[in-house]
Length: 103
Image 1 (cartoon, helix red, strand yellow):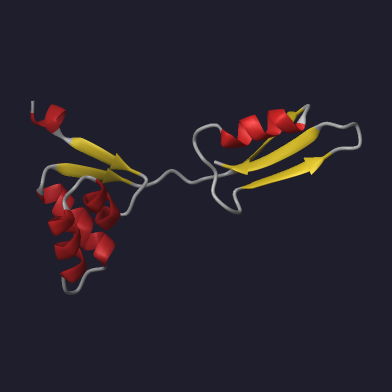
Image 2 (cartoon, helix red, strand yellow):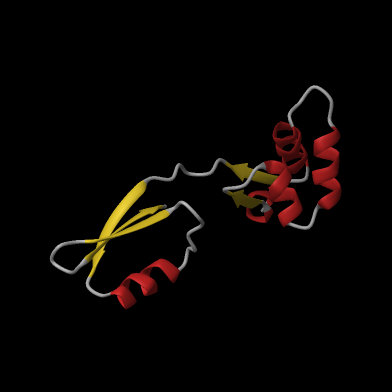
């Protein structure tokens, strides 16, 4: 049952994960640890609290093609949200649009 009660926080540094799950005290304590980076200290604090932190999966560039500008907007605004620099759109000679996105 112990494994069933464990939570996994994906894609965030340990200090950020602690803050995200409402453990501000853990995040502050993690930053104060001597001899360790804030991330290392935060990971240790989360482990001692029965939580685990998995490393973020590496992102990679992907591409897709859409027919209209509205199709492009719909794709770009779909979850997960892209941030600045994670998307590029190019209009092709045939009138379609190539979308390069980082995910």
